Amino acid sequence: MHQDISSASAVSLAPDGIVLAIETSCDETSAAVLRGAEVASNVISSQLEHSRYGGVVPELASRAHLSVISTVVREALSEAGIGIADVDAVAVTSHPGLVGSLIVGANFAKGLALRYSLPLVAVNHIEGHIYSAFLNAEQPEFPFLALVVSGGHTALFRVFSFRRAEVLGSTRDDAAGEAFDKTAKMLGLGYPGGIAIDRLAAGGRADAIAFPRAMMRDDNFDFSFSGLKTAVRTYLQREHPGGVADASLPDICASLQEAIADVLVRKTLRAADRYGLRDIVIAGGVSANSRLRSLFAEQARRAGRRVLIPAIEFCTDNAAMIGLIGRQKLLGGSADDLQFTVHSRPLRAERRKPGSFRDIPAFAAKEADSASSDGGS
Ligand code: ADP
Ligand code: MG
Image (cartoon, rainbow, N blue to C red; front, side):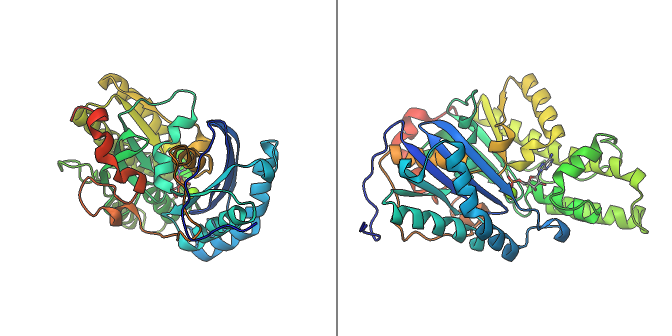
């Protein structure tokens, strides 16, 4: 069947329509099926080939996506109990991420859209994380605060609606997950290192080593984690020049974890106070961290805030969150043409103007609903 590939068309998706979503921005190959707002399947295949390198190797990531993507999509359809003929639309991550990885998912999605004449929506990966809490039973209420904290991103957003969110701050260098992963690499704990540090920290003292808390005194909501990495390296060279004995690992891990959790929790609660936001959503792989969770639970309760952390399958990179955004856009009548391109630009490069997130087209209409949904600022 012929389809005009050059123009975005007006589309309509029924409220119970079926969306197939694909996510390949980094090292997870994921496909999900949404039947209406319900997640019918969410298959995630995590790449193990990077562990020996202490970080994601882009070329290996693209190859791994290529080798599993059709199996992952088939599994998502079969777990949902449907065939491709039942799908009403396709959503796929277009940015930000590793370009070679994004291309695999985007081209697969374009191929499906072309072959089966399906509307296609390109989705911003970070937008997926921001709204991922809507995939849970307990949902946030607009306006809310979202902390996206993963291996690639650390940023705070004030979220007014599905059409409008504002960046309050983001990391100026490394993401929090990178601080976990790079320290884990220095300690010989493999990749990804967050979970290994979390486990070892359970047996250590969080106040054993005073690692720095960067930008805590600054009156903004930006973060910086590269100094922490350097502080750990300096500490190791000074205190453990011959290598770290196993017995010292728990204290180092607990102290590092405390420094990261402390900054994230305090800055986030400060933003909630400043803007009068009750609900706080924490998304991204680092939200799995046990100390971050307990510190948030404790401090937020004291401050009268409600913390919502999506189930772990919706926290780490997953296609269900991409399907959720794709569905919202389709319900609003917009789809993309087959010529959209992928790109890698991280959030910090997108901040053309402080406080704006103009990169997301749906958010460009923010003035339209700002009057009705502004939270007390
Ligand atoms: P991305 O693929 O964009 O890096 P993900 O959302 O897939 O992000 O999350 C992966 C990141 O989450 C890694 O940096 C990993 O170390 C971190 N992570 C996972 N579990 C934990 C944990 N328990 N504690 C701290 N960090 C964690
Ligand atoms: Mg990942």
